Amino acid sequence: MGLLDKTHPQYDGMKPDYDQMRDTYAGSRAVKHREEIYLAPTRSMILDGALNDIDPGKTAYQSYIDRAIFPDLVANAARTLTGLAFKDRSVYELPRALEELYDSATLDGESLETLHRRIIEQILLYGRFGLAVDVPDGEGLPYFVSYGARSIINWDDMMPARGRQNPYTFVVTAEETFRRGVNGDYEWTPINRYRAFELVDGVYQTWTEEDMQPPTEAFAPEYRGRTLDFVPFTIIGSQDLVAAPGPIPLLGISDSALAIYRGEADLRQTLHNVGQDTLVLIGVGDDTEADEDQQPVRVGSTAVIKLGADGDAKYIGVNGDGLTEQRLVLQNDYKNAASEGSRLLENTAAQAESGEALKVRIAAKTTTLTTVALTAAAGLTQALRQVAIWVGANPNEVKIVPNLDFAEDTFTAQQALNLMQAKREGLPLSALTIHTKMRDQDYTDLTFEDEIAQLQLEKDLGITDLLTPVNPVLENLAVEEPPIDPDSEQ
Image 1 (tube, one colour):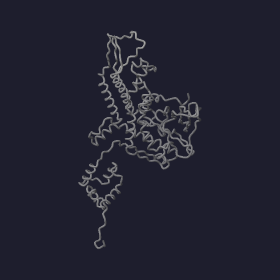
Image 2: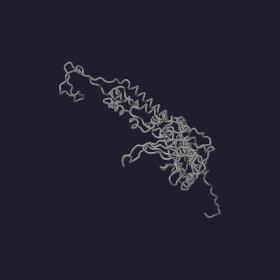
Image 3: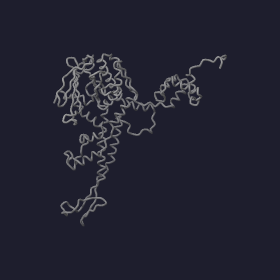
Image 4: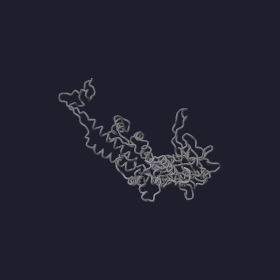
């Protein structure tokens, strides 16, 4: 046991939820690997030795797990919501000294937008994400080191935050990694690595501790001779930038996925039992002396069962009357998962829905996503300002405007024609505004000036059929040519 492996009480309270989100995001294999944590064996399986790896209980329990279906709702929800958050590009403004971070913000070369995307996905999954600022060994700007919610294990945020970059006196992170060569040149050994970010006598210092290794000495990182008087660590939550763990946006979807998993297991167990009738032999007791060459009882079209004169045989099976109720419960579980905003589980492509109704429905489902997008932008802004301070740039020049429009627009060509007709009848709307709307909808990649020039070229070439619907507008927009002097030579 070292000094840095201690955990904060609030982290301990959230750890089961973090583990659940990790497993349900990873999918079916991870969930089923955890066995009784997410799917308890039935009482008969326990009596048959399932929890002690004793057959027949263990085999029956493994079949129970294998037959169950775990729906990939969490990963789908995370991908869908992250995609909506980046439907339109966010705006990033940095001081000139930090422009390199646009294309390479981490040691792995992630762009600022890619890092921003990962922050939002992690907050959706865990409600928490950490960004530390580190300096390279050689030349180059400081860069970001990211830490997931499960890695931020301890912290002290009791220092007054007013007038400071953050309130932390220390933050401790943990990383599960591997080291090669501990027991052999080619063997990888799992190790735990801890890192402390600490404020010592008003100066930021850091040091590390690993399994089977002595701790490193604390040192104050410098960038061109400049140290920091604050801990360059930003903890981004789902609602704010405080260290205390906040709500996990996708936890409800994770719970729904596990409920469906357990319901699927019970339903398929019932279906399996209904299809596996039990053969009952009447008049053949267990105390009947069997011949030494008697074979075990088999069933099937090629099997033969010999009974005495008073013997009888029949099948009995499990009553399947509860199957309907089990299916209804599963349907409701899927509907509950859909209501959590994971994704549209039902096929609504054939349903007519106005653009305004669609926006209202999506707005109701993306309130949390709006909060996450704003908080992620605020956290990334704070972290970038810490970099700016370290390199001597103006932190106030850092600005991030996140995308908050999560609904797909439904501006159709017919609507564009209606606008053009209304414009001809006096609607005070410029052609530039209409063109901008069309460009936003990917109807064209041309600028307004290039579009007008292209239309004029088509007119000069005599391509009138294409211009007929927009001729009145074109006539108004075309640059007037100087009048022709009748006395000049043609």
